[in-house]
Each structure stands twice: as C-alpha cells, then as structure tokens.
Length: 257
Figure 1 (cartoon, rainbow, N blue to C red):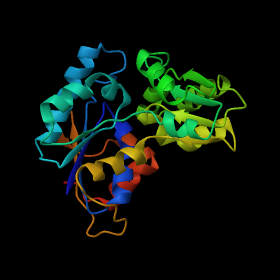
Figure 2: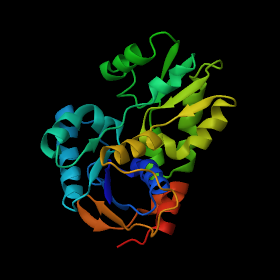
Figure 3: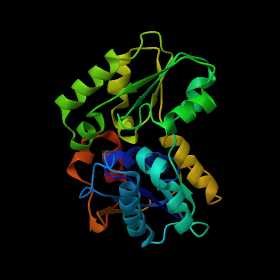
C-alpha cells in the first residue's frame, strides 16, 4: 500500500504522521513545492497550476491514494485534481474541522490564513455546519510562513496575535491550515485550557484508508518506506521538518530512499 500526500510545504507532515500512526506499513510519498510557495497569495488558477504539478509528481510513483494536505489547494484545485486522477486514484481533500468543533455547541473560533478568513468557502462551511453556534473567524497573518521556516520568534508572535483576537469564552478552536497543526501545543498554551483544538490530519488519514478499502492496523509491520519530492525532485525531508515532532517521527521510523 502506498499513499501520497501533497502540499505547498511542510504542512503535509501532520497528515503524513497520522497515516503512519494508523498504518506503519504504508509507503509514503511526500510531494511539496518549496520553489513555488506560498500558494495562498496566488490566484485560484495559479494555485491549481502548482497543485497539478505537485500532484503529477506524486502520481508518477503510483500511489493508491492522494491526500491533498493543504486547505488552499483543497479550496481551489480539488475539482481539477479529481477530474484528472479519479477514479484511478482516489483524491482526498482537507476541510477545516468546523463540523466536529461545533457539534458540542459554541462558541468556537476558526484560525485560518488571511486569504481563507472571511472567504465564501469558509463562510459556506460555517453556514452548513455551525449555523447554530457563535463563530469567530481569526486571521493568522504570517503563522503558516513562520511554521514553514521553523522561525521560533515569528511563530510565537503570530500565535500570540491570533490568541489576542480569540474570545476568552470559546470552547473550541478550529485549526484551518495544515501548518498550524504542527504547533498545536503552542496554540493550546496560548488559548488556555480547557479549549479543544480541532485539526484535520486524523480525519483525512482515516478517510484515505477508507477510500482504498484498508483498515487501521497501528501495529502493522514492516515499517513502510518514505519518498520525498521537492518541486518534483527526489530529496530528503527539509531540515525545517526536523523542528517538529511529526517530521522527526517520520524520519526516525521511515527509511528514506
């Protein structure tokens, strides 16, 4: 079994680690676009063009499924990716976890990039899944870039700024960008207990297995192999990935090749 994941940068680490925890025996292909990021400021057509290039690089290694581990690409490029790749290769998009976050009642906050905050896409999800609860949309300028660069100071500043915009009475915070899941504990510390954080990594990993008819086997052996593609070129995990527990876990248990 082989599962590919794509993103502009290292935001895919959270979903990749979730797949690895569910199925340690799965081979992973991580395809990202450091030469073209960030994708957020690009036009929808520009995002789709970059996402197609990254997806095609991953598909060249014949995965059983492709996870689009990027909110921006899921918003703008998912229909095009599915039109090109399915039904041969299931394509699993990433949707902010607004529905489960709102299930227990509000109020909730949604941390997202400035481009996503207030967008018709996010407002549609709020209308569909959180219409009955109080929702605060919190823009997080610079946070994804800071996480991508593993810039400690910039991460702290961006998290503090977003926390200051988050109402003190929120019950849950939705992490509306895959990069944010890599610093979930910092976000938890900033917003305080007992606020729940809701990311998407676990859900998309489980959905990928369902789409290919596989079950979670957390103790499966042997450990699958890891292949890293940076802008289509064979490489290794970027050094910034080692800054995060998810990157270190993938590097430690996965023989890169």
